[in-house]
Figure 1 (cartoon, rainbow, N blue to C red):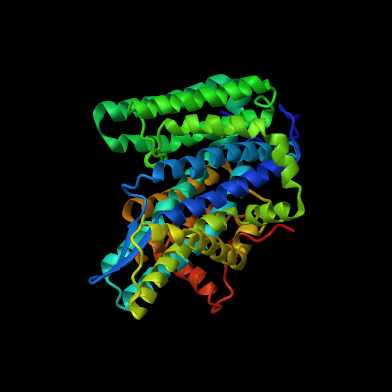
Figure 2: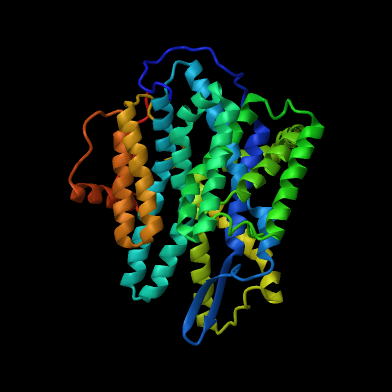
Length: 460
């Protein structure tokens, strides 16, 4: 492990630090858009005599497997996350920055928008209960909202470990990658042998860390240095292995099923994605410089976490509005998967993208604000990452409710406080933390000037 407590020193870069890659930025923007589209197409809303019914339209549907092959972009997103993260870390080290400084900045970038999103979601669930909506429907809404938040916790874990894994990569790149990948496969084997699916959740670490590590090779130029024939063979071999694994029942052909919990199939998907990205990198880069394409890419990349955090509330609001409209005007909503349902999907998907973009414009200031320049020591940054990950885990395990959302926001505020420039100890009283959480919610209505950034002001 690298010495994270070492004072800032200017060190020569072990690998070339490339300039910002607009092609990679475009692919990242496409990944974020793909996640929104995938989740949007999975929303099913019908109305019965008993009231509105919200379902996952993909459950048991034949079409989800081929759709998942097109829109399951998370392996590629983590590869790109590893690429962008290690490039940023190396550049920071060249300027005399530290590992703890990198981790602190990542915590701010990820948790600041999450504090607002989770706080407002908790307030919204409380309002739904107060106006008399059935508790069962509110619980479903909270469950659906919390599901995509796994990404926040896992990405925070990956970024917090990035400096240490980067140091291991510099010393033994192939061995480090092999150990991570082998660990992921071993978890799959133990899960299958024991029949205990819960064991698979250990791969929330190993699978995504392996994919992030692949991004380090991409940043080194090691992948692009391979011949085109070799990269094409890598993609073909990984695809063939996937097909065999699907045909023999080792993994499900539904890539959505392979994400909860994650399986080794995603590693093969990541190899395919990385190989194709490298093969078409120059074409993607040229396309990314077109003015309109560049504008869309820049819009999404400035607001990546805001879009991710808010697309599910937007989809839930769309589903609720559809059911209210259907009930008010006696409209029969098409059955998910039917011809009429598919006929309406293009309008539904475009609306989801447009509304998510509108919300992102309104709330992106929490993500775009620069992180503090001053940082804390390894203990505080490690504790901050742990508290932030625990906050997300609470929502995933228990579900999003007004109470769990309040607790999660309080924990995130503690995490941010730990890596803020102000070295005073965070407030210990839970009542004070809860009060701070709800002030972040009231900020959006303009009732108070407080905001999460005030705990971490921009360095002058």
